[in-house]
Image 1 (spheres, rainbow, N blue to C red):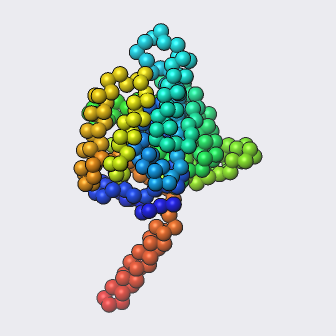
Image 2: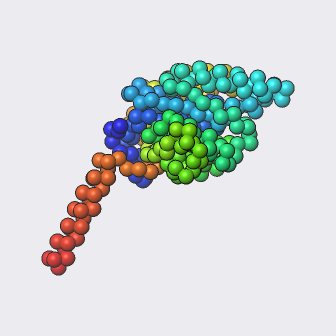
Image 3: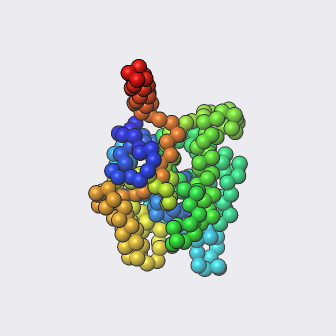
Length: 276
């Protein structure tokens, strides 16, 4: 399931290489996942992972034209996201049809997300970092992004693994599931960088599918490519995605290594005490 464990804390100094067999991206709006972890998703899929995308809303407020029918806009943005998902390589996309601009981390949304997690059974969930209120001094993080991120975290732990959370889901055949990792994107506390040198262009192609939103794509391409190149330079590669990785359950090899380290430390302390 994995190649190597992610760093526990601190800044990333080498490429992050742990890869889930199955992963789910949970985002607030169509295009969030493509501005976010699309290049990482594409790389993982190329290497054998299976991915699924969940959009909490259909982006029905994503227009500068107040006369645009929200239902028509939602249908258009779902088509665009479907086309982008095909570019990335996701197995499928789920739209939860929550209200754009009014997303709330309530029990209704949590149940929807737990249902999706238990159905797809991912090893890792990728979501927007709910602790990011401001992007440094460059802007305010959208309220829907924060709501989607905390709802994803609450669905991952403890709800998706707790049989007493929404017990009717168990009766429907959706058994509890333990997600092992959270990958939080758009984070001010990133501790991992993934080498996406080979899939940056796939990310850009996915973004091109969102034609209703991205009118000046040359500017978007320069901006996205520029900051991903900057992140790549920090680990010696051409382009990188950044994440705040939360390890919920260690891999078996990590647990064994931790046990060995603890035993070695205990032995060293015992020797030091006896010699003193």
